[in-house]
Length: 232
Image (cartoon, rainbow, N blue to C red):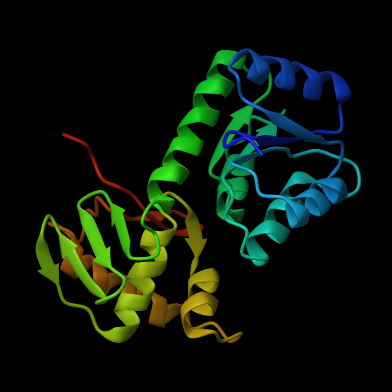
């Protein structure tokens, strides 16, 4: 499999052909699925660098495919395509774990640039993932379980460390309080206040101004997202 193999999931054959042709011009290999069920079968058998996923499909729609991917632990980058330009639909996709979102119609050059950026980011974050996490100014040594910001040590409690590690492992992704609680506390009964307290504690340790966070952002109405912060 090519390192740049992309899975294109769309029920419209002309769209799949157009995307395949555009990527072929860039020497990027593609595979195709005509519906959500076929895509999930392919994802169980193969690994891809990127999934381009249409939202509106008969049977299993794009959001359902995305949710099943994330529930199964598949963190392959996902670029959602939709004819809807409503902001709430984009927020919904990102909340389910999408990495980016394009509204149809779009220029193929924008698609190619977005795809390359998602693949590159995924490769950077996965490099040395077994021993070290690096996001923005933060570095976590996974062997020693030590955290640093710009080389300066950060002190976390055990639960804070687990939550911060999870956020570092998923930069740019939005998680609801429910998702974070179930991931870290492994409990079906969600305690919203607990998450709020721990987010506040972590911000106090990583942000210059916890009231105006640069890294651990609140996404209104959904949850929280870990960002790299502004680049100089």
